[in-house]
Image (cartoon, rainbow, N blue to C red):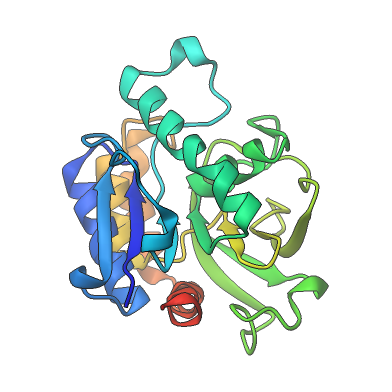
Length: 245
């Protein structure tokens, strides 16, 4: 089959590798089914053609779309520029796309929506997400329970539904947990690839990145391990199954 293009934004090797393993295991993929690019270390290949891929999956990262340009590191700026360079073609062609966490900010910003820290940031942990009425009939959400827990942790969020998007999922603390543009361009605020062990790894890595007081790390890891979070991965696997060519 054509591989899935997996673009990763995390500059920490342990976090990037753990996320990539999660995409493989939760998505039902082998390494041979993917083309992995760590954008903190690699540029997009010259002449990259979306026609070579079944779809595009973007992982999370510590950067924020809404941060002023002058405060971003050179690596963060280069990562953003690379991703944004693909978005016009992805949205114009309605090309299969799944943006996870950081990816919802990328999609919304590209579409002219407001992404900011004004409201709807969520502390590290699990939140209950609910299906919106528009989720009925969506191929990635068919048969999913009306509510389930998912792992989150983000400083910025989409402030209003961008033009042309369908509102698929929400939570009490963040209204836009999953959106779709056109028929095939998806983004989630939560992490569809994350389980409790993977999120514990990220808590250790990002304990000094402003998501939570560093002394809370052990409490947060215990809290995550006590949660049952097994539904979001079904969305990732369905994306792969639905679009694999």
